[in-house]
Length: 483
Ligand code: TXE
Image 1 (spheres, protein in one colour):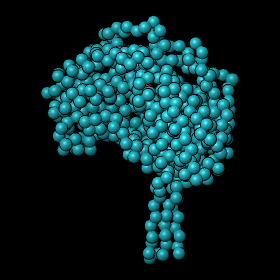
Image 2 (cartoon, helix red, strand yellow):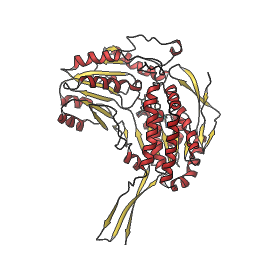
Image 3 (cartoon, protein in one colour):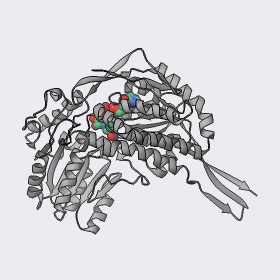
Image 4 (cartoon, helix red, strand yellow):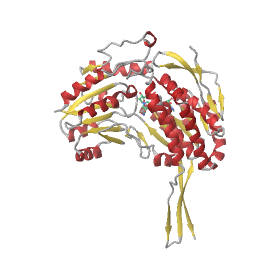
């Protein structure tokens, strides 16, 4: 097996490191890539390179910045299939999901923010009495530190990288050590597009080493992080030393609220998608489904039937619906929750504990498990309060609106929710009371980048989207001219 050698990308050059980290292919359990084990030294070089490039890049006309970013998007589109295959191999996700969602969205992120900076997002006023004109200008902040997770690697990295460089910042990015390959390959496209060296730098390695060195670096005034809530606490502590701008997009324990008048076929198919897409490894996935009691038995029967039909297997196989989880450790963590359900005498209606897996020999050591549905579980159970981040969903009944709103809001997370009913005034009422950043009514994951995305409570701080991202990656100044 040829192991793909990833190298750091500093000042437009690929730089090897002495020590490396093995990166495993989730669907076979084999080492397929070798990742730099970077630390303070490599981060220092990357930050110095970004700092040196900042003056030139921030002074580059936005039309030129936009042109160069669109060039990278065009090159990525040309290599879409290659990137989709690498993403699927690196993360364990279905190849067709990488082909249809991950890489196209990365291309769209680049194009969206390349266009956004051409529109004037500033404001101005005239003060007649004072004979003065007030106007704002948005300056880039400096060197942006970007830390991205392993579940949607290129999709979430570019959702930070695109607005950061479009706004005139230079960046040092540290992708997850478990999924570094597409980020590494993207660097080649920045060179091919003609980006000045030092605008984009990428340092690979462990979070507690390279990540921590980046977050605590005095010359990095801004950190954008997507990952787990526990890790975010460490990031927040390290960043607070220098009063940095901080954006935290964290986990969720997202609920679907299904009223008795829900349009059942669409609701079931969308709840299957929102529960198990990407093996449940999306922060916006549903992991708690509350169903009004009158509908509960019928919903549960149909939902379990549909779950059982989801084939688990080779991410390259067009018949597979569930691919491999990111790592052996994460697989065991998720399976641990299913074992917990059995101990708590909850009902595991389908999934790994009750169904065998027939995998080809090559996939025998892959990190696979069957999609799992649990019911008869208490709201206080860890199954209903902690982010499992795998193909495991709890389905429980509720009686009335006030009760379900109170139960949905009880958890420490507040990222998103879906509400299923034909009653528009109820949709309006319930959406207003759910403590989350996004509510989808009778749908899931319908996204418009013009609007903010992010969570409340322990699901994060800040928002990402057109205005929010440009505001985050710039400092706004008000200038008052008395004539
Ligand atoms: O992500 P981590 P993990 C949730 C999910 C998952 C849990 C932990 O529940 O089980 O988080 O996942 C870098 N200083 N989500 O541990 O640790 C790390 O290298 C600076 C939800 O795999 O949060 C990686 O690049 N950086 C989430 C990034 O942080 C550090 C998606 C995320 O890693 C660091 C992923 C440190 N001290 C996990 N420690 C979502 N919201 O989508 C780690 N990192």
